[in-house]
Image (cartoon, rainbow, N blue to C red):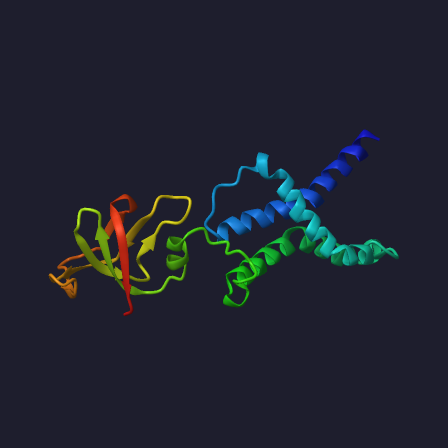
Length: 196
């Protein structure tokens, strides 16, 4: 009797925690955000799992009727695994796509935390002039091999090519033997972006 009780607890845990946990992990992979403290986010995971469970309640009812489990065990297993492990990933990806789309921006609060992440998440190649707090200007190329940090990490940017600028701030030529430059956010006053 105790074994059945333990198995039921495990099943309830899987149904009402795992899908929410998966949703939260996927969300944090897609959107730069603070690290998850699961001891504080336990109820949030249960909430997401409940939404997932409610969305598929019709399917759960169907597969638990008329000996579906016995007659189509493989399909039963596939559907259960889909509901618990795959659907939470799909819901999260859809939510992030909708939340980021221009169409829904006025209705849904953007999940992107700051302008730094907004710009660099687009991964657009461009010319860059970084204005430092000491008055110096650094010119370079931000492209496929460049990188920028994301929230909650401190702002840092790696430009794959360093370029010489004239007095007006125009790009003259690529610096000889450049392998790029890493600039720390604490030194940055502003960044200018120019189309290629």
